[in-house]
Amino acid sequence: MSSVARAIRPFASRVLTQKPLASACQVAPAFRFPRGTRSFSQSPLSQLKKYTESHEWIELADGGKTAKIGITEYAAHSLGDVVYVELPEVDLEIVAGEPVGAVESVKSASDVLSPVAGKVIKGNSILEDKAKTINESPEGEGWIAEIEVADAAELDALLDEAAYKETIDA
Amino acid sequence: MRLAHLHLPHTTPFSRVSHIQQGLTTRLLAHKKLTSPGSISSQEPSNPNATLAKTPPPPPDPTIITFTPNPVYTTGRRDLPPSNTSPPSTSNPTLSLPPALEPIRSIFTPHGNQPAKAEYHPTLRGGQTTYHGPGQMVAYTILDLKRLGLTPRCHIRVLENSVIDLLKSYGVEGFTTEDPGVWVKPITESESGSGSEPRKITAVGVHLRRNISSFGIGLNVTDEPMWFFKQIVPCGLEGKEATSLQGVGVPGLEVGDVADAFVEKFVSRVNADFACGENAHGERIDELVFVDAMLG
Image (cartoon, rainbow over all chains, first blue to last red):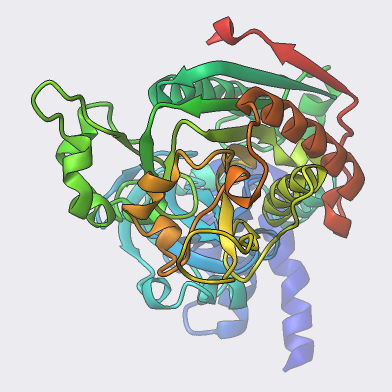
């Protein structure tokens, strides 16, 4: 099992990092893989998670039409205990770089900016009752909004994990 | 780096401070957009190194505004309708009040020839309802926290510790509790009430966008704000009382002097605490400039 996965991963990442494919095509390779073979679809999808220097993450869902948005581990840690999360309203049209919600820790309310343009499908209602989920799992269960992405190619201009890490350490 | 201290003398309409703050925040945000690698609205998509190689314009100075507004109740983010992620409109906000202020609607209503006792301004800061007005020194810090090497949590701690240092210079012991803000023990011969329960002398509330901070603290200097605090449950803290420097035995202070002293303590704290021990490195504040209030 693991040896198969190991063999596949370099291939998948090679496909995705090929420069000529970059911009508009980056999303496409993922969907050429045969459906149902998990080891194939997971690795490319992990490439579709991007970051902003204002500490948001966005992850495209299978199909590339929708995405979840949240704040990064780093942001959740530096904010401290989250006491309140402001969720966006369903159907709200959002512009890249404009607020899609806010996260409030003790006395500090921080805007959450949408990395790309789109339309809100839903906010994560878990956060209404359990704002602390953001601290426990900021890049998992603690996602803030699910949006319909206007143009998946917009993700290309965002930071990948390595570039994001660099902005933190800078 | 240079820190600008803008002190607005006398009492100021809150909307004026709000306007100045907005201008300073926008300036810092615009600069950040210009210089951030991979920033969302950057026109050059893929090559952060090229952007970095160019000499970036110098960042605008961080600013502290200190002022005393006309009587005003401000609400925080949690008191707004959940969908409201943009700044409130400028249309008469007293018409629709958040639940926390509904019981005191008459305070916002003119009676005959008497003007309204206070204004109401919704804001996007953290924290809940509070009051600002004469007898109070309000300090708003408009900073790029990243440049100063402060995390959001650390920024709040620096604000609180600066107040505690300031109180100490007046011989008053301030402390933090599990509730936010800065608290003091009441002096024994105080008016009847909740005995020796700590009383709140300073409220804290901050807004952040891209690590640019706005809003800050409100420190009670005299007892003048007390009547206004008694009308509400400040910051959602039931059964807690407010007090002032005058209330704990330090009368006769000028708000302007308190403001200068606060800024001095703030600068020392930023330079000394340096990211509160967390692993970040920021610039020191090595110069303080006083800005003319006419700028706004």
